Length: 294
Picture 1 (cartoon, helix red, strand yellow):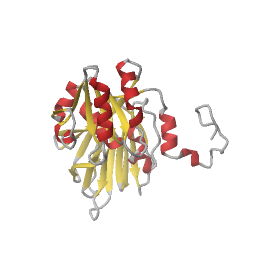
Picture 2 (spheres, helix red, strand yellow):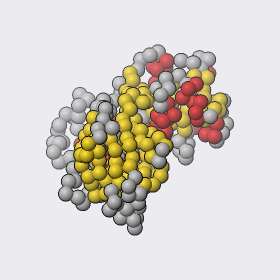
Picture 3 (tube, helix red, strand yellow):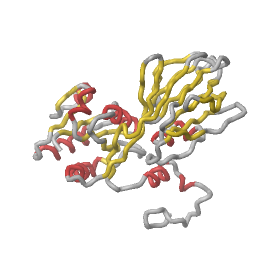
Picture 4 (cartoon, helix red, strand yellow):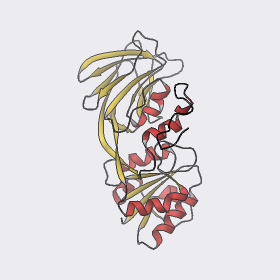
């Protein structure tokens, strides 16, 4: 490993984590890179580069923050060789692999090739002639005062289902534990290559979500009775659509690669983060899947 790129949370204190990376790299001849505007907040020896350069010049990217920072790091690494290591700076997330005290050992393990790669699916959406990419979800969301989201879903060129709802969410397995989950969608392993379509607060005859092949193109047609809708890409508004507009979406497997060190499984992280152990269906004495009892 010759270079490590850092992606920093915009508000949380990342100085201790950056210092840990710099200290680890100091005697190994490894260059530490960072987005110039971000590392400018810190008095450190990292080399500032443009966002577009970071994934291209890094052998490993390290996300210092939460799941939002990790999603941004994955977008920067999209299509590049660098895998992404998530370092937790605060609340437990789904994507982070280690905490700051464990960071030097994690970097040594990665440098010694003692890790695995978890490929992550992206969804590309064509909106007004522009392609945008999400690793969690693309959602069409009602604008207050403008009416419901009335949307027809076409799959592989054929009409499939339609919804009238507050929002219609097209999620990746990564995003299955985010907006889609809050709308009643299923938890989906990141090993599954599929797109999930989930209506939020539906009030139409058909109100169930659907799971679609990643190999089929999905089209959202905004129907004449719909209001104006915001298009949210990983939670950020990317534009607006009107009745008569359409959004073309296609899944893209292995768009980014997440580092795993074998510390926890997806199911353990999901169970802990979503408090599935609080479910009445799981007896207090049930095994926790890690050799112990809850």
